[in-house]
Length: 366
Image 1 (cartoon, rainbow, N blue to C red):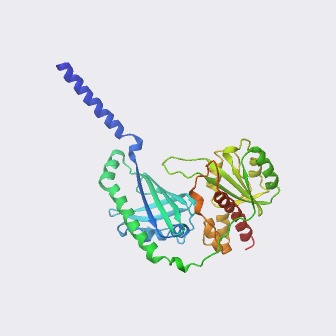
Image 2 (cartoon, helix red, strand yellow):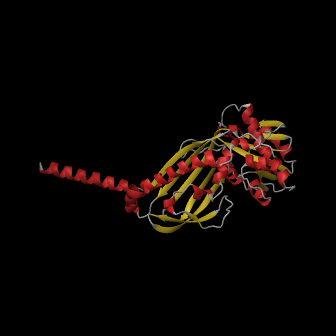
Image 3 (cartoon, rainbow, N blue to C red):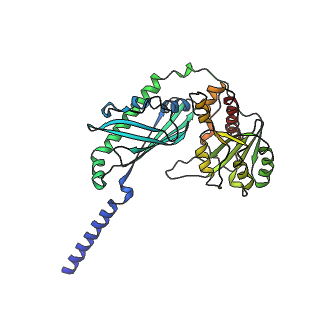
């Protein structure tokens, strides 16, 4: 009887120990808050609103006494630092964030460098549902300081605070998108253009060899990539397509079907051949996961557009501002690893690379 009682006590002690250890696991301290919202506005217009830092004050609850300390206007982009002042339950404090990733008009990520959280990593995603409707997704990974005490504070205060903040944002965004922004009909109807040259689909090493004969003869190329979209947390795919375009020929390389990248690497490392595109840093980082190379001769159109005084940073919005025409962004979220690519997919991919080169030609003459 006594032995059984001792075994029971030991079992209870072990169960409590296991529960306590699990409580102190690192992943238990990092919390995730996610929300999404549909707005009846075009993708580019929605992203443009969030690309202006001063608009953050418009969608932040008054109880935070939110104030941007960094002089306005702020040109947002990868690496941009922004200083804020806020009040958390009556206590004033400063908050500094950094834009970790900037991929207009689809995504940007900001992280806290200094502030009330031990960790704050906020991913903003924008997905075009149709030409006049956008899905906005916010995913926040955060951690409250002070260990186990922080977990208790999160449960009692912080979790509900974040929910209230984003609830307020949702309400204000809906008001602004429905009433404050200019009506859709006020925007002029622009001619939609696409690539009209020859599209070459490259499926193997032999076809790549022939393509490089043309590409290596060019002094400038439009550059872009396409990657299969992921819809699950932690799901990341390698680059499916690499697009390189001259004014007359667009080459769409199916990277999964290519084995020998040496001559392609030589092109990408050739500083004498200019390669131009938008948000190319992220494209290059993903491409380097397929094969190793040192990028040379690449020009970021966002930087060039800023130097030339353009207001917009997305490929579509820059096209409209600089060329007074528009392009389609419809098939962006399709499966680029499908066994058979449709004509619509190929035209979209070719146009994205070609329009980058076209913008480069235009901007370098301003």
